[in-house]
Length: 177
Image (cartoon, rainbow, N blue to C red; front, side):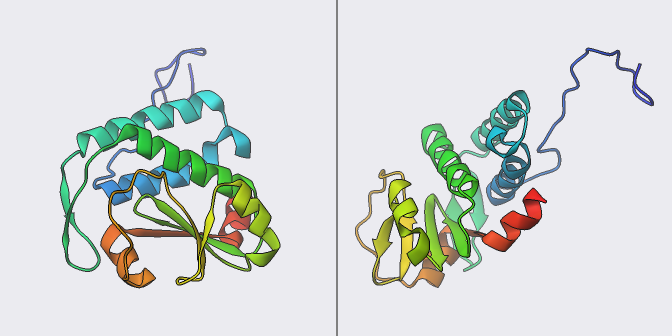
């Protein structure tokens, strides 16, 4: 029996990784934190990551068609798409695992954007499927399943509309330490 717990050695302990986390953006933020910590490519345990993935998709499914207010004050309705969520999470983990120096990775909706000192890593970004956006001066990646035409909105407007989370090389160094 473990100290303070009524659990025998060898029994599985079920951890709710998303306990108390409410709202799609907060669920996604928590998932990214957990993936940085537990992904097998970063020294984590495969079974733990699989359980985190299962709980993540379960929580997002439960949030299907939920409405929230963006930082721009507009109302947004979330529609769960397991395939797209999985592809985006895997690509984000792949980019982070490359440990590219002096760049900033931005998740805006289901698009990944990269800026910073990208000239030194442009070939790696191309290998990862990123394309250069000359008007915005950033590299971008998406699942290829978007419907709308080109947007003339600036990056800040797009980030406010679809939600924004940033990762930079300094943050990656702190997390892996």
